[in-house]
Image (cartoon, rainbow, N blue to C red; front, side, top):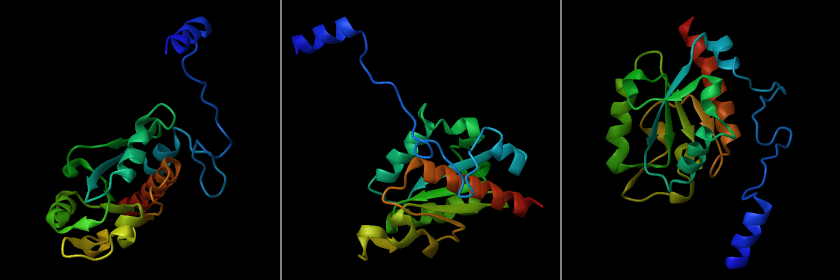
Amino acid sequence: MLKLLERLLKEKVATEAITFKEGEAMPYLPDGTKVTADIIKSRLGRSLHVRHLDAGSCNACDFEMGALSNPLYDLHRYGIHFDASPRHADLLMVTGVVTRNLAEALKRSYEAMPEPRLVMACGDCAIDGGAYGESYAIVGPAEKVVPVDIYVPGCPPRPNVMIAGLIAAADMLAEKLK
């Protein structure tokens, strides 16, 4: 430990520089368009507000979603914000398989959102129940409780895939607002 500390003090670099591989860390749309700060505003005309609801996940999707706010992905620069209340949200982002204890919370959150509203099932568990299967404590995928508009697969989905899904949500919301 003392040798490590001595080396760190001599080198004065405790972490490695972040490197970006083209198309890996930063999101690109399927057509190859790079996601920029203006993309949501140009498509929607304003920012997109998201309410997250963990319906009974293992938290893997939630950890990846937390990465959306770190300096690498910096979700806010795209004009996408997470809200504490469903009353201020355009999109309900559901992670995890829906448990019986949280089915009512999911339904009430959806009903509290203003029209037009969207639902994104984020992760395999929210899409089809994933590894949880069927049991007395599980209702199933999110679409058994609320209508789902966007599916983001993965176990857990990568943050750049979530961003691509959120941009698709902005497109869908822009169509609904016309």
